[in-house]
Length: 312
Image (cartoon, rainbow, N blue to C red; front, side):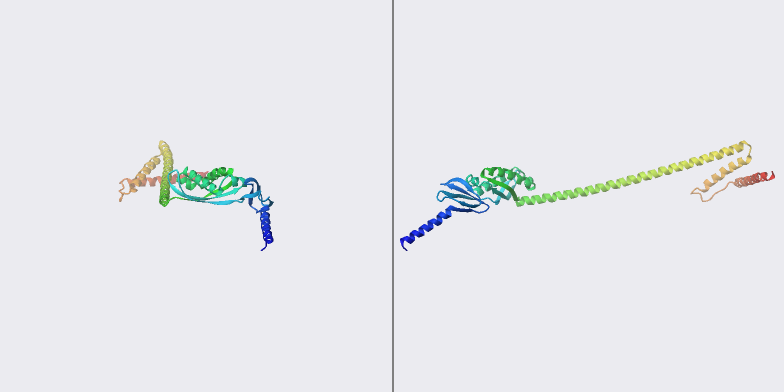
């Protein structure tokens, strides 16, 4: 190989290097920083760019797409001294390439350290029950704190999600026993409430039954009293009529009155439940004969009253 060929090869190599440093193509989703003698000058957006070789150079190539950062598991002590194991994910995006490139040495490591530190801070201010039941509140508090802290780096933290909060096994067993005890307690309370309601309903039913029975007796007594009152009124009226007849000198009325009372007394004696044999007094036949005589007199009077209009 002659000197001329060697010089030509060197020139070609230098030309390729110069061309490569002169023409820059930034892919979509990325931004490149430009440095002049090691000092930041500007940022190249996606597309074709030309740089003066050996004076301007590409500094940092920043990914501008949203990225996912996995937060490794770590042990965290809660407010009530329970140790839980926590992990999560962070979604963030670089908004200003120059700040992300020059304001922090290692963006991912710094963001990860910031998130892990604030996870311990947030969960340390809660007790175990709150940390297990308020996952959304934890995520919101972490997002607010971390987003404010990374803002000077030109980074926007879009979302932080706690994937898992795992208590130790003995604590999980204790929580399971507690949950079982709570369920048994609720079951016993519900069963007792059922018995209580049944007893109340039964007592109320007995009360209503007693009230209705008393009202029935009251109504029956009222009607019975009313019947006795009407009967007494009728008897009083009959007695009055008989008294008027007696006052007028009607002996049949006297006999009728005495015979009626006598028959009623005999009837009461005959209706007695312990009475197996009825003894009639000697004069009973006479009285009954008197009643028969009274009936005959009545018939005669009625016959006279019926015959009188015919004679006219």
